[in-house]
Structure formats: structure tokens, C-alpha cells
Image (tube, rainbow, N blue to C red; front, top):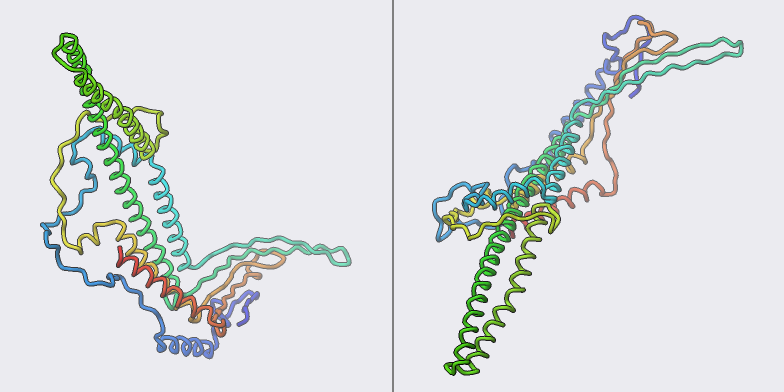
Length: 381
């Protein structure tokens, strides 16, 4: 279709759409759209995908299910543990990676959404030309161009939805990382308290065993004990002393692990640790399998990936259908910027893939197999 520009003072038809004044153009477009609509070869993406196995209605020991506590570590009522978790959530490099991935996904989703709307661009140019007689002729051009792909088969919408689901998946991955990080910090923290208590116990045993050895040696000097009693007590004291370095090294390793988990360099700062183990809170409710599928962030992440993969299949199927692009421009072009040099044009472009040697069809099949792979992963998890 040609670009129908008009440079006279009076523009006719009213909007300069001379190329659309022909009834044949509308008939061709209508026939094409009807043929594609009747074909019904689009892919209808699902908003809910279930595992490939039958989930039982309840566990044998299920209790009344309650929503999981986000700040579950506060049930230990340990200020030192709460401080470590707060510092970790602000300084952990693992969580910073997750936040960055979420921001990237959100930006990508916004970029895909922008494809649904017309694009506008301006072009301003100034040029001069000289004839053989040395006469200078200036030419001005100021125009605004637009282009818009009509989302007839929801190809662009499917791409936007897929990226939106991927954003939700990245959010769930961050939640899973936060849960895992909090669990590791709590585990190492409680283990560190245990090692400190064990170290105190060994030091008390060492002091008591040293005093008892002195008493046995005093009794041996008075003839009330044998040399065997002295050797046995020395052996017990040596056994206690050999355990002390092991416990100290284990406690140092746990401190280094905690420092790395909260985003610090090991050995750069002291860690506040309670002097006793906290009281255990009540055990969590088991719930039913359907609740666990919703509560676990790793399962939510895979589920969102499944929905995104299904939308990508719809995008690939729509890519095999014709595309309708509208382009146009309006502005002034000529020796001077006046109403006499005003122009406006619009053009419709229909792109229809004819022969691509199976490229687009293979892309659809590849994305379908990827969906099957994710479904198997989701079911296994």
C-alpha cells in the first residue's frame, strides 16, 4: 500500500486517508480477519495448572491449618536472634540478588506492556541546496510519526502476562530464599548456644577433675589410694582437655557462618548470643496438601513459571498468524513551515508468514515440551 501524502491547502478526504477510501481495502481486511477468526487456531492459556498426580484430601495426622507465620523466629522470644535476622534481611547478599532479579522482571514486564500502545516519534530536519545559478533553497521538515501493532491474536498480551508471571515467580523465589536464610541463621545460632553451653560444661568438668586429681594424689601420699587411681583420673582429665579445642573450633566456625549469612566479614564484629537455649514454641500445624501447595514459596515459584510457560505457548502460536501494523506521519515539509506544506498520511501493513521451513511451528513444540518439563518438576517437588 502506498503512502498517501497530500500537500495542498485543502486536504480531502478530511483526514488525508485517501488510501482507506477504497471499499476494496475494507473488504480485504474483513475477509482476512474473518478467515483467521473462523480458523480458531489460537492457544487458550490456562490460569490454573494442577500437578500431574492426585493430591490426597488430608494427611493422617492433620490438624486445623493456620496461615504460616512470616516472622516465625519471634516465637523463640530471643532478642539476639531477632537482631541477627533483621540485620540479615538488610545486608544479606543473597537477598540483594533476589531483589535485583525482581526489579529486572518488573522492568521487562513494563517493556512488554508498552508494546500494546502506539509508538510516537518526532523528526525535525533543516537542509539547504544550491542551483547552478547559486540560488539557495532551504527546506524544512517537521513531522510526528507513529506506529502501532494491533494485538489481534493476543500475542503481545500473552508476552506481557508471561513476564508478569515471571515477576511473581521471582518474588516467590525471594521469599523462599528469605525462609531458607532465616532457617539457616536460626539453626546455626541455636547450635552456637549449644557449643557455648558445652564449652562451659567442659570447663567446669576440667576444674572439678583437676581438684579431684589433687585429692587422689594427696590420698596416695597418705597411703589411702593406689597409683592406678591416679592414672585413671589423669586419663579422664586428659580426655576432657582434648574435647575443649574441638568445641572451641566448632563454635568459631558457627560464628563465621553466622557472619557470612548476615552479610558481614567473619571476625569483624562480635555476635550477641544468649546464654541459654530458648523455650520451644508449639509445633506448627501440618495442614492439608492443598494448603501446603499455597504456603510453600518454592512451589508457588514453579507454579508461576508454569503459567508463564503456558502464556509463551500462546505467544508462539499467535506468532504464526498475520500481523496488522498501522503507521503514519503528520507535519510540515517544504521551503517554509506553513499550512500550505502540511501533510498527513497513514498506512496499513499486513505481515503474514508463508514459508519459514517449520521455524515457528518448532518454536511452539519446543515451548510445549518445556511446559511438560516444568509440570514434571512441579509434580515431583
